Image 1: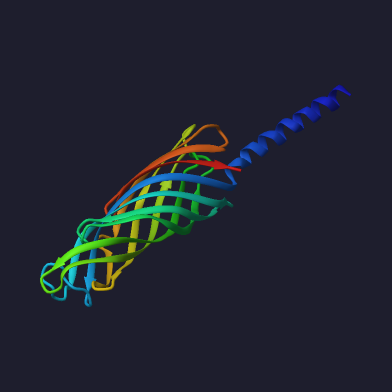
Image 2: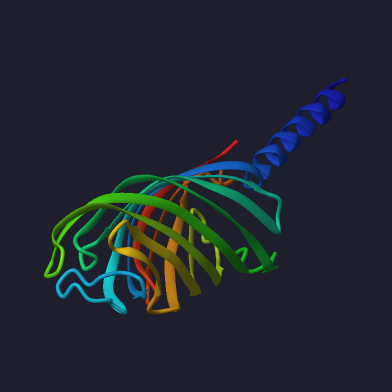
Length: 243
């Protein structure tokens, strides 16, 4: 009887350990705050230059965005699939002082672990395609030599496509990671008098650097921070929990 009890207690302990270890897998929810800035180039054939009243061809500016985003995902190892939703603002001062208010934001992506070591600090190499979309609006006022003072509503649609390739390794409760990124921007600005203009990114290549801090050995919950530069500069911090 004593041996039977010992065996059952040992089995329960092992089951508990396995269950906790599996917290690294399965569904999860993350919430992060991000400040993002990237250089953009607007190509316009139909629109009017507000300073000359003549057709304008190109504008250059910086698109600054503050984002509060949640990600709901399923980690299946080596495949991680997630949906993104939240809100984003957009400011492009060079585009007639455009200040878009908080707009609904949607997207998603997948993260594929192409290689994972079982012996060296869980080192892994991953690729992470991702997409983000939002559409904002603002009331613009400008002066045209031919039309005078014009006040109109401008809409901006903003779609980012990105791919990250990097590596990470876990040391106790810390998991640093880094890599390179390639991104593309598909945007459009439109207004009744202004017309329609397409804009894109001015830089495609970048880098990223970040770290996860786990509250427990199983990775049930964690804090994370990340910075990026090159194609777009950003800083984000967030928290993640697994169900």
